[in-house]
Image 1: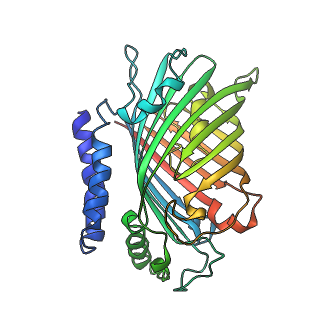
Image 2: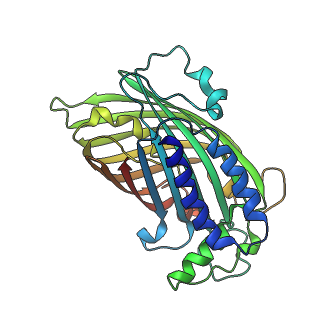
Length: 346
């Protein structure tokens, strides 16, 4: 069953992408082939949840900046006898959690694509002071370790930016299907680059109401890589049911390259805030080792997320509206988007 689920999921993604890009020379096979190499090798454990997440600024009546993200995620939540084991992609981070007391774990594997464009996509040569065209095709492995009073997270992402991300053809195909304006400026996108990111975080329930229907979850995280590097601290106020079993997913809420689906039981409304200092982010800084378009931006940012999660038996729904930076008006279009996640228990 595990092998069938993994292969079937990858086959669906491969068929979808191939149907869009069969004509786009050999770059599809290089980029997707390498990502599948990273994806198939780590996924050895039993998968008991699968989810699809759509990020899109059209949910906020916009079509620029962080314009779209699509993610397919597989979850291994383990069983009472044995918790899932981390993949080799997480080995460089295991020393940060060794010796800590955890009684359970969740392993999450995500294959995703994101794209970012300037506000006016009809201009072939956008102003250089606007966010450059860029896409990211990536594989992420996030591992949540659950203790009695806190949840730890380690995460590794690897992927491609530039034409190898295939974001240009994705956006043009989608816009053609929905009869929207065709993006004209992809010739100015940042160049091809193999990128990565390592992350380490912790979530802790700092306050729980007497009736257990309210709680406040504090989070801290550090990330390092060519995708982005930074320090993040935040909190999430939640109201709902079964909050004890889902508070660790607050660690997944502030990033675009992971999937913040709530799996388990219950429902909750939540309001989250994150204060983050960004050392580098490739979508604004441009290529790491080559000249490309880039913009200046405030490295300190304050993000806000409002959302709702509902899980019943084998189904889970999460909807959220996020602004990852309410401070810097220059990056407003890059940081505002809506997010919808549908998950199913196998």
